[in-house]
Image (tube, rainbow, N blue to C red):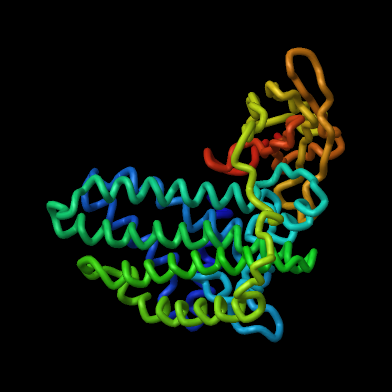
Length: 374
Protein backbone atom coordinates (compact mmCIF):
# COMPACT_ATOMS: atom_id res chain seq x y z
CA UNK A 1 0.00 0.00 0.00
CA UNK A 2 2.86 2.37 0.80
CA UNK A 3 4.37 1.83 -2.68
CA UNK A 4 1.02 2.45 -4.37
CA UNK A 5 0.58 5.71 -2.46
CA UNK A 6 4.02 6.84 -3.57
CA UNK A 7 3.10 6.10 -7.19
CA UNK A 8 -0.10 8.10 -6.86
CA UNK A 9 1.85 10.97 -5.31
CA UNK A 10 4.21 10.95 -8.29
CA UNK A 11 1.27 11.01 -10.68
CA UNK A 12 -0.26 13.88 -8.74
CA UNK A 13 3.03 15.80 -8.82
CA UNK A 14 3.27 15.21 -12.54
CA UNK A 15 -0.25 16.51 -13.08
CA UNK A 16 0.43 19.58 -10.96
CA UNK A 17 3.58 20.52 -12.86
CA UNK A 18 2.44 19.57 -16.36
CA UNK A 19 0.17 21.35 -18.76
CA UNK A 20 -2.80 19.17 -17.85
CA UNK A 21 -4.03 21.24 -14.91
CA UNK A 22 -5.91 19.26 -12.20
CA UNK A 23 -4.27 15.93 -11.49
CA UNK A 24 -5.69 12.58 -12.40
CA UNK A 25 -5.07 10.87 -9.05
CA UNK A 26 -7.32 13.31 -7.18
CA UNK A 27 -10.04 12.99 -9.82
CA UNK A 28 -10.03 9.19 -9.52
CA UNK A 29 -10.00 9.31 -5.72
CA UNK A 30 -12.96 11.70 -5.70
CA UNK A 31 -14.86 9.69 -8.31
CA UNK A 32 -14.49 6.48 -6.30
CA UNK A 33 -15.53 8.23 -3.09
CA UNK A 34 -18.65 9.67 -4.72
CA UNK A 35 -19.54 6.37 -6.39
CA UNK A 36 -19.26 4.54 -3.06
CA UNK A 37 -21.56 7.10 -1.43
CA UNK A 38 -24.09 6.93 -4.29
CA UNK A 39 -25.27 3.48 -3.28
CA UNK A 40 -24.47 -0.24 -3.38
CA UNK A 41 -25.41 -0.57 -7.07
CA UNK A 42 -21.90 0.49 -8.15
CA UNK A 43 -19.91 -1.41 -5.50
CA UNK A 44 -18.56 -3.91 -8.06
CA UNK A 45 -17.53 -1.08 -10.40
CA UNK A 46 -15.73 0.76 -7.58
CA UNK A 47 -13.87 -2.42 -6.59
CA UNK A 48 -12.78 -2.95 -10.21
CA UNK A 49 -11.77 0.69 -10.69
CA UNK A 50 -9.79 1.17 -7.47
CA UNK A 51 -6.56 -0.65 -8.52
CA UNK A 52 -6.50 0.65 -12.12
CA UNK A 53 -4.46 3.83 -11.65
CA UNK A 54 -1.84 2.20 -9.38
CA UNK A 55 -1.49 -0.67 -11.89
CA UNK A 56 -0.97 1.75 -14.80
CA UNK A 57 1.61 3.68 -12.78
CA UNK A 58 3.42 0.47 -11.78
CA UNK A 59 3.54 -0.90 -15.33
CA UNK A 60 3.76 2.19 -17.55
CA UNK A 61 4.94 5.35 -15.82
CA UNK A 62 8.13 7.11 -16.97
CA UNK A 63 11.33 6.09 -15.20
CA UNK A 64 12.47 9.70 -15.17
CA UNK A 65 9.66 12.12 -14.54
CA UNK A 66 11.49 14.98 -16.24
CA UNK A 67 14.13 13.69 -18.66
CA UNK A 68 16.74 16.25 -19.68
CA UNK A 69 15.88 18.09 -22.86
CA UNK A 70 12.32 16.73 -23.14
CA UNK A 71 9.03 18.29 -22.10
CA UNK A 72 7.30 17.17 -18.94
CA UNK A 73 5.35 14.01 -19.74
CA UNK A 74 1.60 14.06 -19.27
CA UNK A 75 0.36 12.23 -16.20
CA UNK A 76 -2.62 11.10 -18.23
CA UNK A 77 -1.24 9.52 -21.39
CA UNK A 78 2.25 8.98 -19.90
CA UNK A 79 3.68 10.32 -23.14
CA UNK A 80 1.68 11.62 -26.13
CA UNK A 81 4.28 10.20 -28.51
CA UNK A 82 4.50 6.42 -28.67
CA UNK A 83 8.28 6.86 -28.78
CA UNK A 84 8.03 8.44 -25.31
CA UNK A 85 5.61 5.85 -23.98
CA UNK A 86 7.66 2.92 -25.31
CA UNK A 87 10.68 4.12 -23.28
CA UNK A 88 8.76 4.13 -19.99
CA UNK A 89 9.98 1.59 -17.47
CA UNK A 90 7.10 1.72 -15.00
CA UNK A 91 7.15 2.54 -11.32
CA UNK A 92 7.70 -1.12 -10.39
CA UNK A 93 10.27 -2.57 -12.79
CA UNK A 94 10.98 -5.35 -10.28
CA UNK A 95 7.61 -7.00 -10.91
CA UNK A 96 6.56 -5.56 -14.29
CA UNK A 97 8.46 -6.15 -17.53
CA UNK A 98 9.36 -2.91 -19.32
CA UNK A 99 8.45 -2.46 -22.97
CA UNK A 100 12.13 -2.55 -23.92
CA UNK A 101 12.64 -5.75 -21.92
CA UNK A 102 9.60 -7.28 -23.61
CA UNK A 103 10.96 -6.58 -27.10
CA UNK A 104 14.35 -8.02 -26.13
CA UNK A 105 12.71 -11.16 -24.68
CA UNK A 106 10.49 -11.70 -27.73
CA UNK A 107 13.41 -11.40 -30.16
CA UNK A 108 15.53 -13.76 -28.04
CA UNK A 109 12.56 -16.14 -27.54
CA UNK A 110 13.27 -15.94 -23.82
CA UNK A 111 11.02 -16.16 -20.74
CA UNK A 112 10.23 -13.97 -17.74
CA UNK A 113 8.49 -14.28 -14.39
CA UNK A 114 7.53 -10.59 -14.45
CA UNK A 115 4.10 -9.32 -15.49
CA UNK A 116 4.41 -8.81 -19.24
CA UNK A 117 2.84 -5.86 -21.12
CA UNK A 118 0.29 -8.18 -22.78
CA UNK A 119 -0.66 -9.60 -19.35
CA UNK A 120 -1.12 -6.04 -18.05
CA UNK A 121 -3.19 -5.25 -21.14
CA UNK A 122 -5.51 -8.19 -20.45
CA UNK A 123 -5.77 -7.18 -16.78
CA UNK A 124 -6.74 -3.60 -17.65
CA UNK A 125 -9.32 -4.73 -20.23
CA UNK A 126 -10.83 -7.17 -17.73
CA UNK A 127 -11.22 -4.48 -15.06
CA UNK A 128 -12.68 -2.05 -17.59
CA UNK A 129 -15.19 -4.75 -18.59
CA UNK A 130 -16.29 -5.21 -14.98
CA UNK A 131 -16.87 -1.47 -14.61
CA UNK A 132 -18.88 -1.32 -17.82
CA UNK A 133 -20.98 -4.35 -16.83
CA UNK A 134 -21.88 -2.72 -13.52
CA UNK A 135 -22.81 0.53 -15.27
CA UNK A 136 -24.96 -1.36 -17.79
CA UNK A 137 -26.81 -2.93 -14.86
CA UNK A 138 -28.17 0.49 -13.93
CA UNK A 139 -30.13 0.65 -17.19
CA UNK A 140 -30.45 3.68 -19.48
CA UNK A 141 -31.95 5.89 -16.76
CA UNK A 142 -30.29 5.49 -13.33
CA UNK A 143 -32.84 6.07 -10.57
CA UNK A 144 -30.88 8.81 -8.80
CA UNK A 145 -28.81 11.74 -10.14
CA UNK A 146 -25.88 10.76 -7.91
CA UNK A 147 -25.82 7.31 -9.55
CA UNK A 148 -25.92 8.80 -13.05
CA UNK A 149 -23.05 11.15 -12.23
CA UNK A 150 -20.99 8.37 -10.61
CA UNK A 151 -21.61 6.09 -13.58
CA UNK A 152 -20.28 8.80 -15.92
CA UNK A 153 -17.13 9.15 -13.79
CA UNK A 154 -16.58 5.39 -13.75
CA UNK A 155 -17.10 5.20 -17.51
CA UNK A 156 -14.16 7.61 -17.92
CA UNK A 157 -11.98 5.47 -15.62
CA UNK A 158 -12.88 2.36 -17.65
CA UNK A 159 -11.88 4.11 -20.89
CA UNK A 160 -8.64 5.25 -19.29
CA UNK A 161 -7.89 1.58 -18.55
CA UNK A 162 -8.77 0.57 -22.11
CA UNK A 163 -6.51 3.30 -23.50
CA UNK A 164 -3.49 2.01 -21.60
CA UNK A 165 -4.43 -1.61 -22.33
CA UNK A 166 -4.04 -0.86 -26.03
CA UNK A 167 -0.93 1.26 -25.60
CA UNK A 168 0.84 -1.55 -23.77
CA UNK A 169 0.69 -3.54 -27.01
CA UNK A 170 1.55 -0.55 -29.21
CA UNK A 171 4.71 0.04 -27.19
CA UNK A 172 5.87 -3.57 -27.66
CA UNK A 173 5.32 -3.42 -31.43
CA UNK A 174 7.16 -0.09 -31.62
CA UNK A 175 10.16 -1.40 -29.66
CA UNK A 176 10.25 -4.53 -31.80
CA UNK A 177 10.42 -2.24 -34.85
CA UNK A 178 13.28 -0.26 -33.32
CA UNK A 179 15.16 -3.42 -32.34
CA UNK A 180 14.67 -5.35 -35.60
CA UNK A 181 13.93 -2.54 -38.10
CA UNK A 182 10.96 -4.59 -39.35
CA UNK A 183 8.47 -2.40 -41.18
CA UNK A 184 5.69 -4.86 -40.37
CA UNK A 185 6.08 -4.11 -36.64
CA UNK A 186 5.87 -0.36 -37.32
CA UNK A 187 2.69 -0.94 -39.35
CA UNK A 188 1.28 -3.05 -36.50
CA UNK A 189 2.16 -0.28 -34.02
CA UNK A 190 0.42 2.27 -36.24
CA UNK A 191 -2.77 0.22 -36.54
CA UNK A 192 -2.76 -0.40 -32.78
CA UNK A 193 -2.21 3.29 -32.06
CA UNK A 194 -5.17 4.17 -34.28
CA UNK A 195 -7.34 2.02 -32.01
CA UNK A 196 -5.76 3.67 -28.97
CA UNK A 197 -6.64 7.11 -30.35
CA UNK A 198 -10.27 6.01 -30.82
CA UNK A 199 -10.46 5.10 -27.14
CA UNK A 200 -9.10 8.49 -26.06
CA UNK A 201 -11.66 10.13 -28.37
CA UNK A 202 -14.38 8.16 -26.56
CA UNK A 203 -12.88 9.23 -23.23
CA UNK A 204 -13.13 12.91 -24.15
CA UNK A 205 -16.76 12.45 -25.26
CA UNK A 206 -17.61 10.53 -22.07
CA UNK A 207 -16.00 13.23 -19.91
CA UNK A 208 -18.27 15.84 -21.49
CA UNK A 209 -21.41 13.72 -21.08
CA UNK A 210 -23.41 12.84 -18.00
CA UNK A 211 -24.47 15.05 -15.08
CA UNK A 212 -21.82 16.75 -13.00
CA UNK A 213 -21.33 15.59 -9.39
CA UNK A 214 -22.03 17.76 -6.38
CA UNK A 215 -19.15 20.15 -5.74
CA UNK A 216 -16.37 18.81 -3.52
CA UNK A 217 -12.61 19.18 -3.13
CA UNK A 218 -11.72 16.75 -5.93
CA UNK A 219 -11.40 17.78 -9.59
CA UNK A 220 -14.34 16.82 -11.79
CA UNK A 221 -14.42 15.41 -15.32
CA UNK A 222 -15.12 18.90 -16.63
CA UNK A 223 -12.06 20.27 -14.82
CA UNK A 224 -9.82 17.77 -16.61
CA UNK A 225 -11.59 17.97 -19.96
CA UNK A 226 -9.53 20.86 -21.44
CA UNK A 227 -6.29 18.98 -20.78
CA UNK A 228 -7.75 15.77 -22.21
CA UNK A 229 -8.81 17.61 -25.37
CA UNK A 230 -5.30 18.98 -25.77
CA UNK A 231 -3.96 15.48 -25.19
CA UNK A 232 -6.26 14.22 -27.95
CA UNK A 233 -4.71 16.69 -30.35
CA UNK A 234 -1.21 15.50 -29.46
CA UNK A 235 -2.17 11.84 -29.71
CA UNK A 236 -3.69 12.46 -33.15
CA UNK A 237 -0.46 14.15 -34.25
CA UNK A 238 1.46 11.10 -33.00
CA UNK A 239 -0.70 8.79 -35.15
CA UNK A 240 -0.16 11.05 -38.15
CA UNK A 241 3.62 10.84 -37.60
CA UNK A 242 3.43 7.04 -37.52
CA UNK A 243 1.32 6.96 -40.67
CA UNK A 244 3.80 9.21 -42.46
CA UNK A 245 6.58 6.74 -41.62
CA UNK A 246 4.91 3.58 -42.81
CA UNK A 247 1.46 3.92 -44.35
CA UNK A 248 -0.25 3.06 -46.52
CA UNK A 249 1.86 -0.12 -46.64
CA UNK A 250 2.68 -1.76 -49.92
CA UNK A 251 0.14 -4.46 -50.77
CA UNK A 252 2.90 -7.03 -50.83
CA UNK A 253 3.74 -6.32 -47.19
CA UNK A 254 2.52 -9.24 -45.12
CA UNK A 255 1.34 -8.56 -41.58
CA UNK A 256 1.44 -12.23 -40.56
CA UNK A 257 5.10 -11.85 -39.62
CA UNK A 258 4.47 -9.77 -36.50
CA UNK A 259 4.42 -10.41 -32.79
CA UNK A 260 1.10 -11.47 -31.33
CA UNK A 261 0.36 -12.21 -27.66
CA UNK A 262 -0.07 -15.90 -26.99
CA UNK A 263 -3.72 -16.37 -26.07
CA UNK A 264 -4.00 -20.12 -26.53
CA UNK A 265 -2.84 -23.23 -24.75
CA UNK A 266 -1.59 -23.41 -21.17
CA UNK A 267 -1.00 -19.91 -19.77
CA UNK A 268 -1.41 -20.77 -16.08
CA UNK A 269 1.68 -20.32 -13.89
CA UNK A 270 2.57 -22.74 -11.10
CA UNK A 271 0.57 -22.82 -7.88
CA UNK A 272 2.46 -21.65 -4.79
CA UNK A 273 1.54 -22.63 -1.22
CA UNK A 274 3.51 -20.80 1.43
CA UNK A 275 3.00 -19.51 4.96
CA UNK A 276 5.23 -16.53 5.58
CA UNK A 277 6.73 -16.10 9.06
CA UNK A 278 5.86 -12.83 10.77
CA UNK A 279 8.99 -12.73 12.96
CA UNK A 280 12.30 -14.57 13.16
CA UNK A 281 15.13 -14.67 15.73
CA UNK A 282 18.22 -12.59 15.05
CA UNK A 283 21.44 -14.35 14.14
CA UNK A 284 19.68 -17.54 13.02
CA UNK A 285 19.33 -18.75 9.40
CA UNK A 286 15.93 -17.89 7.96
CA UNK A 287 14.43 -20.92 6.20
CA UNK A 288 11.82 -20.24 3.51
CA UNK A 289 9.83 -23.28 2.36
CA UNK A 290 7.13 -23.29 -0.32
CA UNK A 291 5.17 -26.01 -2.10
CA UNK A 292 5.18 -25.29 -5.85
CA UNK A 293 3.21 -27.45 -8.27
CA UNK A 294 2.25 -27.37 -11.95
CA UNK A 295 0.96 -30.12 -14.30
CA UNK A 296 3.63 -29.12 -16.84
CA UNK A 297 6.43 -29.47 -14.31
CA UNK A 298 8.58 -26.85 -12.58
CA UNK A 299 11.46 -25.18 -14.41
CA UNK A 300 12.79 -23.13 -11.48
CA UNK A 301 11.89 -21.62 -8.12
CA UNK A 302 13.91 -18.66 -6.79
CA UNK A 303 13.88 -16.59 -3.63
CA UNK A 304 14.46 -12.83 -3.91
CA UNK A 305 15.17 -10.95 -0.67
CA UNK A 306 16.71 -7.83 0.89
CA UNK A 307 16.50 -5.69 4.01
CA UNK A 308 13.72 -3.11 3.93
CA UNK A 309 16.20 -0.29 4.54
CA UNK A 310 18.64 -1.50 1.87
CA UNK A 311 19.24 0.47 -1.31
CA UNK A 312 20.74 -2.54 -3.09
CA UNK A 313 18.70 -4.78 -5.43
CA UNK A 314 17.01 -7.94 -4.18
CA UNK A 315 19.48 -10.81 -3.80
CA UNK A 316 18.60 -14.17 -5.38
CA UNK A 317 18.83 -17.74 -4.11
CA UNK A 318 17.86 -20.84 -6.07
CA UNK A 319 15.35 -22.85 -4.03
CA UNK A 320 16.28 -26.52 -3.83
CA UNK A 321 13.73 -29.20 -4.72
CA UNK A 322 12.45 -31.56 -2.06
CA UNK A 323 9.66 -34.15 -1.82
CA UNK A 324 6.01 -33.43 -2.64
CA UNK A 325 6.80 -30.29 -4.61
CA UNK A 326 8.49 -28.57 -1.69
CA UNK A 327 11.25 -26.07 -2.42
CA UNK A 328 13.41 -24.28 0.11
CA UNK A 329 16.16 -21.71 0.48
CA UNK A 330 17.96 -20.31 3.52
CA UNK A 331 18.84 -16.68 4.13
CA UNK A 332 22.27 -16.77 5.84
CA UNK A 333 22.35 -16.02 9.57
CA UNK A 334 24.74 -13.12 8.98
CA UNK A 335 22.00 -11.29 7.10
CA UNK A 336 19.29 -11.90 9.73
CA UNK A 337 20.04 -8.78 11.77
CA UNK A 338 18.06 -7.88 14.87
CA UNK A 339 15.70 -4.93 14.67
CA UNK A 340 15.51 -5.01 10.86
CA UNK A 341 12.91 -6.32 8.44
CA UNK A 342 13.53 -8.72 5.56
CA UNK A 343 11.41 -8.41 2.45
CA UNK A 344 11.13 -11.37 0.08
CA UNK A 345 9.14 -12.81 -2.78
CA UNK A 346 9.30 -16.07 -4.74
CA UNK A 347 9.78 -16.38 -8.51
CA UNK A 348 8.37 -19.51 -10.17
CA UNK A 349 8.44 -20.78 -13.76
CA UNK A 350 6.89 -23.92 -15.24
CA UNK A 351 8.34 -25.92 -18.13
CA UNK A 352 6.04 -24.19 -20.65
CA UNK A 353 7.39 -20.75 -19.85
CA UNK A 354 4.54 -19.59 -17.58
CA UNK A 355 6.02 -17.60 -14.75
CA UNK A 356 4.84 -15.43 -11.88
CA UNK A 357 5.82 -13.90 -8.56
CA UNK A 358 4.38 -14.84 -5.18
CA UNK A 359 2.72 -13.14 -3.30
CA UNK A 360 0.15 -12.43 -5.99
CA UNK A 361 0.14 -8.70 -6.85
CA UNK A 362 -3.63 -8.84 -7.28
CA UNK A 363 -4.14 -10.04 -3.71
CA UNK A 364 -1.98 -7.64 -1.71
CA UNK A 365 1.59 -6.39 -1.19
CA UNK A 366 4.15 -7.73 -3.71
CA UNK A 367 6.41 -9.16 -1.01
CA UNK A 368 6.41 -10.81 2.43
CA UNK A 369 7.81 -8.95 5.42
CA UNK A 370 9.62 -10.71 8.27
CA UNK A 371 10.46 -8.63 11.34
CA UNK A 372 13.74 -9.75 12.92
CA UNK A 373 13.57 -9.78 16.70
CA UNK A 374 16.05 -7.49 18.52
